Length: 133
Image 1 (tube, rainbow, N blue to C red):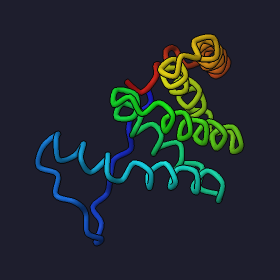
Image 2 (image 1 turned 135 degrees about the vertical axis):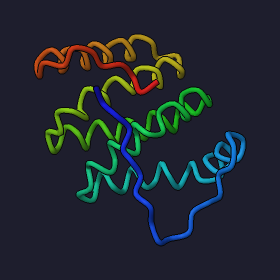
Image 3 (image 1 turned 90 degrees about the horizontal axis):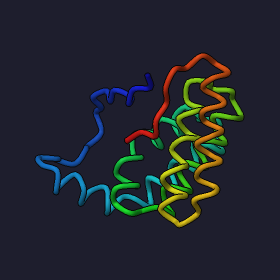
Image 4 (image 1 turned 45 degrees about the vertical axis):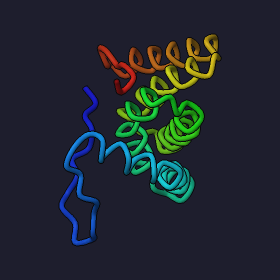
Protein backbone atom coordinates (compact mmCIF):
# COMPACT_ATOMS: atom_id res chain seq x y z
CA UNK A 1 0.00 0.00 0.00
CA UNK A 2 1.16 3.51 -0.79
CA UNK A 3 2.46 5.35 2.26
CA UNK A 4 2.93 9.01 2.76
CA UNK A 5 6.61 10.00 2.58
CA UNK A 6 8.56 10.41 5.76
CA UNK A 7 9.84 13.93 6.26
CA UNK A 8 13.50 14.32 7.21
CA UNK A 9 14.61 17.00 9.64
CA UNK A 10 16.08 19.98 7.84
CA UNK A 11 18.29 22.90 8.75
CA UNK A 12 15.81 25.32 7.22
CA UNK A 13 13.21 27.04 9.36
CA UNK A 14 9.79 25.47 9.52
CA UNK A 15 6.55 26.63 11.06
CA UNK A 16 5.71 25.62 14.58
CA UNK A 17 2.70 23.35 14.20
CA UNK A 18 1.25 22.75 17.62
CA UNK A 19 -2.28 21.71 16.68
CA UNK A 20 -4.61 20.96 13.80
CA UNK A 21 -5.86 24.54 13.52
CA UNK A 22 -2.31 25.89 13.21
CA UNK A 23 -1.45 23.28 10.58
CA UNK A 24 -4.59 24.06 8.59
CA UNK A 25 -3.90 27.80 8.79
CA UNK A 26 -0.38 27.25 7.45
CA UNK A 27 -1.69 25.04 4.64
CA UNK A 28 -4.34 27.64 3.78
CA UNK A 29 -1.72 30.40 3.67
CA UNK A 30 0.71 28.34 1.57
CA UNK A 31 -1.76 26.42 -0.64
CA UNK A 32 -1.02 28.37 -3.83
CA UNK A 33 2.73 27.95 -3.27
CA UNK A 34 2.28 24.21 -2.71
CA UNK A 35 0.25 23.86 -5.92
CA UNK A 36 2.89 25.86 -7.81
CA UNK A 37 5.66 23.72 -6.28
CA UNK A 38 3.92 20.57 -7.48
CA UNK A 39 3.55 22.00 -10.99
CA UNK A 40 7.20 23.04 -11.03
CA UNK A 41 8.40 19.65 -9.81
CA UNK A 42 6.27 17.82 -12.38
CA UNK A 43 7.56 19.90 -15.28
CA UNK A 44 11.21 20.27 -14.24
CA UNK A 45 12.40 16.70 -13.81
CA UNK A 46 11.28 16.04 -10.24
CA UNK A 47 8.32 13.68 -10.78
CA UNK A 48 8.73 11.94 -7.43
CA UNK A 49 8.40 15.24 -5.61
CA UNK A 50 5.22 16.03 -7.52
CA UNK A 51 3.59 12.67 -6.85
CA UNK A 52 4.51 12.63 -3.16
CA UNK A 53 3.36 16.21 -2.58
CA UNK A 54 0.08 15.47 -4.32
CA UNK A 55 -0.48 12.33 -2.22
CA UNK A 56 0.47 14.11 0.99
CA UNK A 57 -1.97 16.98 0.42
CA UNK A 58 -4.89 14.96 -1.00
CA UNK A 59 -6.87 14.81 2.24
CA UNK A 60 -6.38 18.47 3.03
CA UNK A 61 -7.36 19.60 -0.47
CA UNK A 62 -10.41 17.38 -0.92
CA UNK A 63 -11.83 17.59 2.59
CA UNK A 64 -11.17 21.33 2.62
CA UNK A 65 -13.20 21.73 -0.56
CA UNK A 66 -10.20 22.99 -2.55
CA UNK A 67 -11.23 20.92 -5.56
CA UNK A 68 -9.81 23.17 -8.28
CA UNK A 69 -6.40 23.22 -6.59
CA UNK A 70 -6.63 19.47 -5.99
CA UNK A 71 -7.44 18.90 -9.65
CA UNK A 72 -4.43 20.98 -10.70
CA UNK A 73 -2.07 19.26 -8.29
CA UNK A 74 -3.29 15.71 -8.93
CA UNK A 75 -3.22 16.30 -12.71
CA UNK A 76 0.44 17.34 -12.47
CA UNK A 77 1.13 14.28 -10.33
CA UNK A 78 -0.61 11.99 -12.82
CA UNK A 79 1.36 13.47 -15.71
CA UNK A 80 4.62 13.16 -13.76
CA UNK A 81 3.92 9.55 -12.81
CA UNK A 82 2.99 8.71 -16.40
CA UNK A 83 6.05 10.42 -17.87
CA UNK A 84 8.54 8.52 -15.74
CA UNK A 85 6.49 5.32 -15.44
CA UNK A 86 6.43 5.51 -11.64
CA UNK A 87 4.21 2.44 -11.31
CA UNK A 88 3.54 2.70 -7.56
CA UNK A 89 2.56 6.39 -7.83
CA UNK A 90 0.62 6.04 -11.07
CA UNK A 91 -2.63 4.46 -9.80
CA UNK A 92 -2.68 6.74 -6.77
CA UNK A 93 -2.36 9.85 -8.90
CA UNK A 94 -5.23 8.68 -11.12
CA UNK A 95 -7.35 7.69 -8.11
CA UNK A 96 -6.76 11.01 -6.33
CA UNK A 97 -8.28 12.79 -9.31
CA UNK A 98 -11.62 11.04 -8.67
CA UNK A 99 -12.71 12.96 -5.55
CA UNK A 100 -11.43 16.24 -7.01
CA UNK A 101 -13.45 15.85 -10.19
CA UNK A 102 -16.49 14.66 -8.24
CA UNK A 103 -16.22 17.70 -5.96
CA UNK A 104 -16.39 19.87 -9.06
CA UNK A 105 -19.54 18.05 -10.21
CA UNK A 106 -17.70 16.18 -12.98
CA UNK A 107 -18.90 12.75 -11.86
CA UNK A 108 -18.51 10.90 -15.17
CA UNK A 109 -14.89 12.02 -15.44
CA UNK A 110 -14.33 11.08 -11.81
CA UNK A 111 -15.58 7.57 -12.51
CA UNK A 112 -13.34 7.32 -15.59
CA UNK A 113 -10.27 8.26 -13.56
CA UNK A 114 -11.12 5.81 -10.80
CA UNK A 115 -11.68 3.08 -13.38
CA UNK A 116 -8.32 3.90 -14.98
CA UNK A 117 -6.67 3.59 -11.56
CA UNK A 118 -8.29 0.17 -11.16
CA UNK A 119 -7.02 -0.96 -14.58
CA UNK A 120 -3.50 0.16 -13.68
CA UNK A 121 -3.72 -1.64 -10.33
CA UNK A 122 -4.75 -4.86 -11.99
CA UNK A 123 -2.02 -4.57 -14.62
CA UNK A 124 0.74 -4.20 -12.03
CA UNK A 125 -0.66 -6.57 -9.42
CA UNK A 126 -1.83 -4.06 -6.81
CA UNK A 127 -4.75 -5.49 -4.86
CA UNK A 128 -6.30 -2.21 -3.74
CA UNK A 129 -5.68 1.46 -4.26
CA UNK A 130 -7.90 4.11 -2.85
CA UNK A 131 -7.63 7.84 -3.12
CA UNK A 132 -5.29 9.10 -0.41
CA UNK A 133 -8.14 9.57 2.06
